[in-house]
Structures are given as C-alpha cells and as structure tokens.
Length: 169
Image: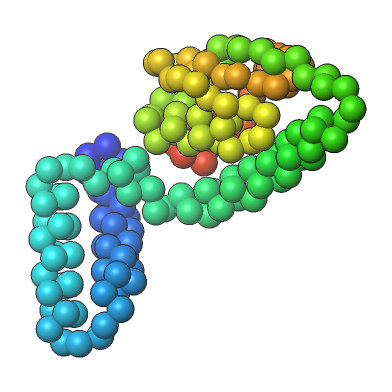
C-alpha cells in the first residue's frame, strides 16, 4: 500500500472491501445470518491477506478511478460504432477495397492493466486486432492501412493511460 500513499491505500482497501462484499452478495443471493457471517469472515480474511501481502494498489483495486473508466468506455463505444459502420460498408460493397496492414504501435501505458486495456480496446474496435504485446509495443493487424498509420492509435493510447493509470490526458 506504500505505492499510492496512506490515503490512497485506505481508499483502495475500502474499494476492495465494497467489491468483495458486492461479489459475495451477488454470488450467494441469500441473506441468512449464517451465510452473511461466513461472507463477513471470508471478506475479512481476504482483506487481511491483501494488506499483509501489500498487493492493494491502484492496479489491483482500481475502484477510485471508476468515473474516469466509465467516461473512457462511453468514448470507446462511440469508436466501436464508427468502426462497425466502416466494416459494414466494406462488406456491402461489390468490390472488396480493404488494404490490410500489420503495424507496431508504441504505447505510453506503463502498467499491465493499462496495456491490457489498450490492447483489448484495439481488438474490440472492428477492423483491428492486437496480435501481441511485447514491452511497450503492440503488434496490430488492421483491415485498412490508413487506419493503421503512425499516430492512428495515439488518442486511444492517451485516453487508456489516463483511465487506467491516472496519467495526464
């Protein structure tokens, strides 16, 4: 918990507590005293172990950044809709005018969470697929070469880093 300061460590721990309680209640579905007490014991043990192992940080419990993540997902849904439209138009044309390309994309994302979010965002967008991630480079296949030009993924990379790591947008 030393990674984000004492306040943020408590915030991440509180977020983990809320998430574990919500998960327990959703999975059990029963409000009997015995089940609630077993749930409380298991959540307490999990929180204790997480504190002792010092694994509660912004990557393992990103609950304080939910508003930023929600904004990012709304933006990503817009990008997915635009890309779907482009792929649908390509499929409906009589002549297949695709020009596939493989490109290496450098990312500013540092954490595994941010890199995974960025890679999955690229793959979720129709017409592009992330094939591999090595260090700070992603290998991306795109249906259209112009969609894979240098800088084509800069906005998504910047927004992903801001949402997942709190980096300046």
